[in-house]
Image (cartoon, rainbow, N blue to C red; front, top):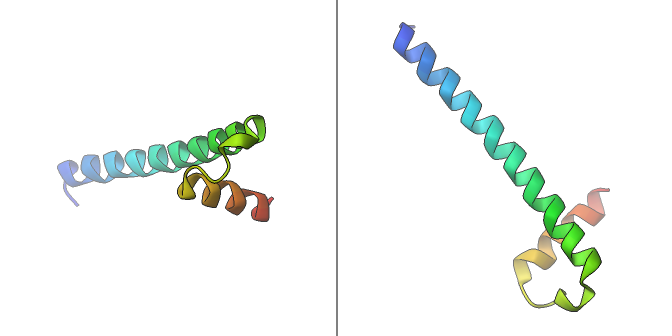
Length: 58
């Protein structure tokens, strides 16, 4: 593996880790918002799905 390939692999690993952290943070934010604003349930199917998914895994 060349030095350039090692740098690219390290960059990809960093991007993957950042993506996972961002996904987790967004899920937490959706759940917190749905807890604070019950009137938002049913407005957006994906938000409802994330909220229910997190609740079932907790």
